Length: 586
Image: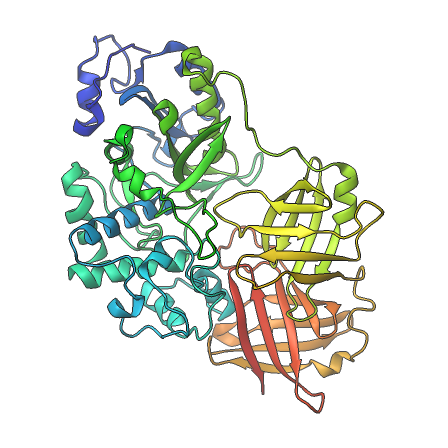
């Protein structure tokens, strides 16, 4: 590779301009930048095995103090046509789009065209009202309490490609919230699709055109689009592949629904790099757009969030940064303490992890720059739970009042709790108290295990910011015996209908126990086994584990409600980001 000296403003012009200032040396790709041979060798090694023609790979950049010090592509952006990764290849960056949505909202707020504390219904007049105010700020900070529309689709038996209007129609039928807005945090794409609708309403133009006027054109991002259909292919676009195992042909990865403010951006790497460089401008004195997007943001109770207005907090090796990742294999972060931006696009899910590569690129930079002051690892996160702690907490615990469950599954060096579906690693705080590890994707919860120092606890006391007080989760018996034995399976058999989702669910009795299926005919969805956990409470286990299909549901918390005479009349469904869906027995 060739050394060059890219100016601080290089990216604000183009990557090509930065390269043009280099001393020319013969090479196959004249856009490659390797200002530090040691750094580039370390990053190149991360892509070993993914740099051959026909192999999915990626493209990576490191920017230090405004200078591109590493830029290189690896493998193929499209394996069928042997298109190599390069800065001018278009790629879907998925949820990194959320930062652009937050950026656009703040610009419109600066112009007086909206206020972050405007009620959502002020701009979306057909959206339902709730007892507590729901504001734009709640959308942008993932504290709205809205249902996750990507879960609503399979819950409603939707199996085909869903449009934005269809998803919004489902969201509009929500008549109860997961929690009071502002009291808790859940990563919900619904917020961002609704924010895009608000931006369209405020500007009077399409979501894509609004971004073009507010961000793309001012930053010179002339090869960036925001089309809703991820399945639509554009000229020069890379393809996302899903690793299926050694010797198995990889799958193309596609979304079965349209996207907008949550994840619609299609951009090139050189176009994209302009954006974090722009956000960085003025960070030294706290006047940058980056400083505004990262927050701070807080819950109503005063607790700080790890999520700003489209940027999530990144803690690594004692450094504190902010950035975002995307489901297509993309990640970027800015660490202001050392003025470091790392960005990576990959297109081989299951084989190359963008989030892991991002931290490995930070490692590579720190190892190649002893003057950074961060050469020794520090703050690497909580120590893993001991095997004894894993064994004590292993099992399923159920809230008898709601049917919500906490399921602990021990793995070597770690323990994961599932809060009605959402996996959350725990750390030990001492005195039989544990908490979920800080993460933008999972709700922070505190778990107290009374008497854990003397044996496996019979119950857990769980605190979540959305609840007024801790809730009691009781250990469920192993298997199906005992938990639901007080009532015969026939009590639950029947058809149940949801006015919210406009779909029938069917509970049936089989030789091995109760089963449940979603819909029928063209609206037929998944099938589940019902595993009893408490009186009238079950976990619905999907017959087929959700792997390749984004519309496959995980395990569900099911609670049946009875009339005064004892007849089962209502079925309640909850999972990590949709709580309280009702089905009435027909």
